[in-house]
Length: 439
Image (cartoon, rainbow, N blue to C red; front, side):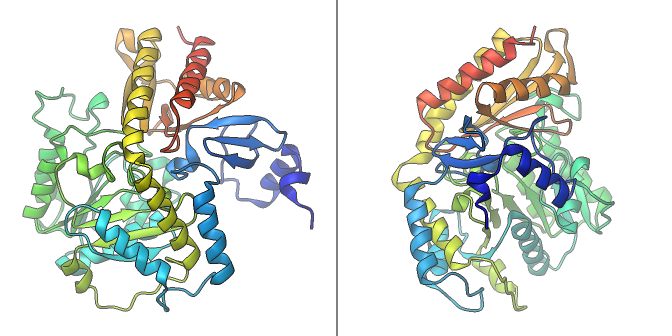
């Protein structure tokens, strides 16, 4: 068999992609980048071009591409035992569960492992419904929960709803999106009305007794939307008074990504009843996690299995990844380099005040929203500028992400061990790229 990684050109790979994959499996860029190799914060394409990767497989390559410590753990486990399913306990899975109980906030203790963030959220919803005896759930507009039918129902982002999802009992509260406040108010004089509105949402659209509230500490696909600091304290108090539990979706914000803390919710002074994780937990190996307090976990009596959940290889990768994050103090590095990145993005906003409408984020989870003319308060999403910036950055060797309902928000999220030099290089490329078209 031909080694496609070394023998195929980008054109050949793209032709096969078009012929054999669903057309809905989209790629970035007019001419998609066919990646073959990675090392730390850099990746290489089929023609040997190198790029600085500041999106990391959608916030997944948390300790950089091909980290030797993670890869060594994977290779050792692969040579010893590759797969058994959750029907058999293994040392890697119990070590990972114990580690997660130690590093997660509050009283979270017992885990269920699956293969994706979608499955993690599904598991969390089932736990909440069984524990409370209620069915109805509150999620947030602009939120994203995954690809299954339930996850699409929880998702309030039309581009990711393949079919009309009419799963009963899912209600969507207002997003804490200050830059585009749905209530046309201004923080802090608004008194965080987007949070207090949850009380009326529950009283008018549910039975009044709900199962839970699922929310991301920072909305990821929504465009790295950072809530007001009081938001979660207000929101979770309302949810608990209505009988619900708080499901914290840390799929994108977990494991030091937001800087200084291991989990995003730790910035907001509330403790989750259930937490979901995936992406950065295993540096790219497929793994989803749902962890709950003992009383919630123990309430679920029906047998549970997952064929691929917490398999020995993914668990070994996760244990190694989390050990690297802790030993190398990468949450602190995310804070330091995130501050450096944020300062640079703020400078770009000053240099290009018309098209750069908002800069926001925490740690190494930073966003820049492109608009038509911020100087004239015309905040119409500028998807054309976003597309131009994407192509210009790619041409100069920088890969970034995007999000938001209109795809006009740049999502910038390098590996947690990114260096100051790499941050400076990325900022230089962003500035040069903006200068090619911005006014």
